[in-house]
Image (cartoon, rainbow, N blue to C red):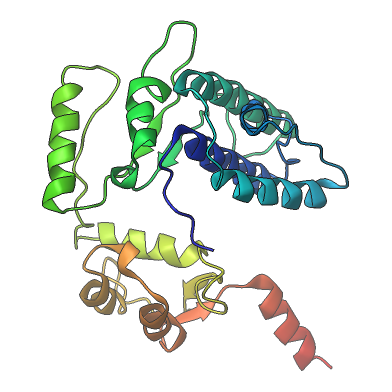
Length: 272
């Protein structure tokens, strides 16, 4: 199900809870149904939430509640969202560290990735005026924001935002360019293939793909498939779609699925 961009502060709170829950699931942590953001949403909705059952049931119930709240006209202040987010993120980091996950080091920090903020409305104003700006007594949460629309109205709004925030030390504006065809793009394409990102393309974008053994050329030479990727994607992996991916990967002689379970299943089948 496609998720509409958040227009209000409450809808932004819903999306942040969804993101926190996805992160918890990735680290095999229980859902944050008792988090501060969830509590603020429940208070705004006038209906305290109660969850029961195991972690998977609580997670499903939480997602159902968030879907309903996203459609409601709720009133949450940007300041309350900021403080609740700060506490929820701190709690999440404490749990991740306590889990002993090897990918988390002593200096690891959470980073918010927020895409398409050009499509937001009231939520965008709250983002820059309160949620991300430094506040006494609150740690600032690092964030990377995506402003996607190249249209004239959107770019005018971006220029206005830059002018309003000019001189602020807590934010920087950097243009993103397509990956350069000098090996940088090759790494981007390989990362894309190694990290499944869509369950809506079963058998293709929900699988890990690697280059077949024995295809490597002379040392320092580019992979033989790279030229085809460059023509199709022009240095922008986001352009990849189901049909393109199928043509580039599934029908290619250059790649094979790196799904360990499928490989093991095929091997066991051969041994029967």
